[in-house]
Length: 320
Image (cartoon, rainbow, N blue to C red):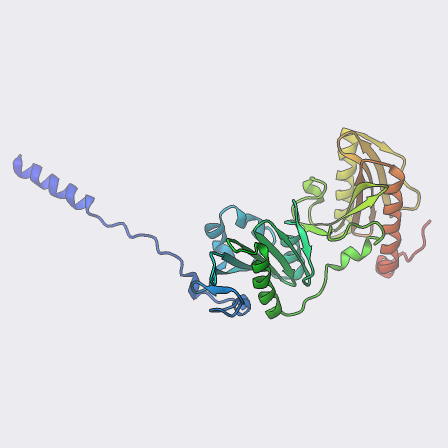
């Protein structure tokens, strides 16, 4: 019995001593990306010192590195994140430069533009940039650059020097997506353009929409355009929006000669809406004040679209 007990103890001891191999840490410094060439090295950027080698985090490991914040970038098909950490020279400043790379400039614009919320101030940096508290954001082509930091005696000014250095190294890029040219320029709120793959007017079926805000009669009016895959899919989107008002509010008289199909509606909570379909495009305007202002905006957008893509629509500029 003693020998048997000793054997059991020996077996148990052997089991307890089984080594579980620790999970290897990702060597992000060994991964390459075109974005690395934009980061300042050593003390190239005035007032900043690179603390350690930059890293590159591929999309499939972004959630592991950024947590839930990474979900936002994955929705826009981010390719990778290039990141450098910097310390202020002669002060307690600290900064992290993040360069998110996307497959095209539209996806990059979407990831950047949907972050234009809260108290922000736009900067004179191409293609577009703004500063928030302790952070500077920049969109340039297929890249979204974010600099986060603090501790400097001049607040965000030192962060601006850092982002300006990176921006100068980045190639010139096209401006905003051409869809925004369909919207009128009169009464448009500057820098209000956004592209969202998630929703429009807080409705998921209005996703993948290009959105703009207008100021009409002293009241905000939001408008969006969805370039859908086909006419049938555009019809489905318009019908879904119409049904939302049908079940929650009431439909009003349609507007003569607006698009190929349209509706107007109002609801206490959803506001007033004017929406139409033209070929595979869906256009919607939403506000809470005068209906005529929405109709005029929708009509002006319709005319600009006809002038720009009339030949592609196959029906020219004539309407029955």
